[in-house]
Amino acid sequence: MTQDDDGERLASWLEGLGLADALGEAGLPTFTRDADGRAVWTEPGRVAELEAALRSQGDEPGRGVPVQLVLVARQARLRTQLLATRWFTYETLGELRGASTEATRFAVHKAAQTHRLLVVPVDDGVVVPGFQLGPDGEVRPDVAPLLEPLLAARMDPWRAWAWLTQPAALTFGMAPEQAVTDPDLADLVLHAAVRLAEHVGRT
Image (cartoon, rainbow, N blue to C red; front, side, top):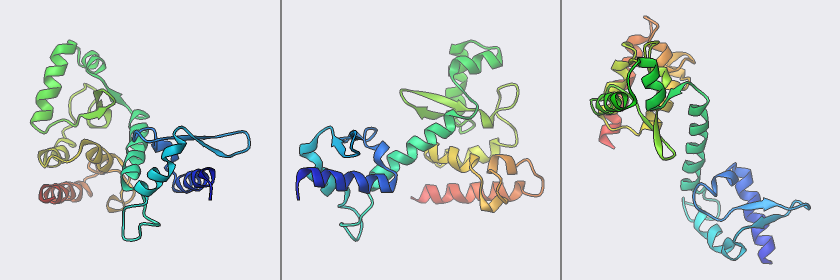
């Protein structure tokens, strides 16, 4: 089997897993398709090494899913989802609150340190997801009790954002940050947040 065949097989495998676009983000060799649809790798000499590394995980190395690449791909999807929603920088949040950028930066850091505000790292900076804020730019009183246990447990900010904002079966298809506004679901959501925080704290 030729190097080209190896490269084509690896490319097809990654495309089938939906992970081809995550290669560059993970700092790995990437590929494009030429006019004939063949995979053209940026570093063809590393294809065998790359395949061995990606298939080395799991109980069945020949079929193993590259876990780190899956995580990179998931992070990229979450980033896209977050940036498609309402979010703030220090500058834009300051404008909403009628405060200076420096005062807002200080307030955001203080609130994050005391587990009262979720701040998510994006690229070389941070953003403040808008779901947790009211019209005045301050944290929603109904969301604060959800944030506190999760952030105190040092839950990964991306994981916390995903849990709070994604529809869940527990809350009948509503995101926890939405369900907490329903009097019939609020206690259930708060209990779930505490239990999740306890689990995070043990791991």
